[in-house]
Image (cartoon, rainbow, N blue to C red; front, side):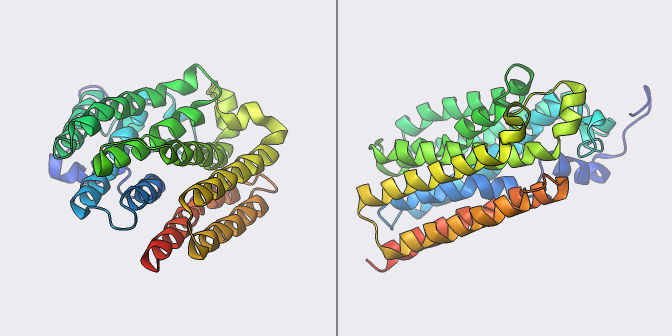
Length: 295
């Protein structure tokens, strides 16, 4: 920790610290939030979404994920130093102050809201829900063993916002995609929590990885199956074609691969399985994109 009275280096020397605080050096979170957003935009636009809306939401994904990381590190600033994976984070080591982190969080949220102003009233109203979910999620691990569900709700909120931004409406398929995204998020974030399980048990942080215990792999498998079933239901409702289902087949194969990785609950392998979900989201989007392209 930085000693009291020790001055911080000039701002330009601290740019890497702020990049690390926003996790811009680790874009996996951006990608995991981006793919379901693109699913929703392409379905809402029936394969031809308004590209100005696509740009707004892609930028919004970057800003909101960055803001979420900042407030997460602020919430965990007193415990990150006790966890092997997080002990060198800028807030935990004192390289960034709490006031600076909160200022950055406010700036990122303000920029995200500015982008939403270029959509419509319905989307603007929904954005307040996104802000509430993003700000509250990091504190859930202190009160419930299901903070991964809160994260899923926050990540999936891009689905109704995408439909509102594209069509100014919320048809029934919104909630199928929302449910699939929420369940998928719980599955992969449980893998992520398995990396920190021993540290979390020691310091008293709650997670699905802890509450699931030895049933963790089975429950993750059930969540992955539920995700696929909801996406099949979506395909049937929208009368999607072969390319979409091939994308789901690839996703199913990747889920099997992830189960093999987490088999022994090795930390590095669990983290690799978590990262592999980027390919799941991409496979589903490519299948969806090609399906609309060749209709």
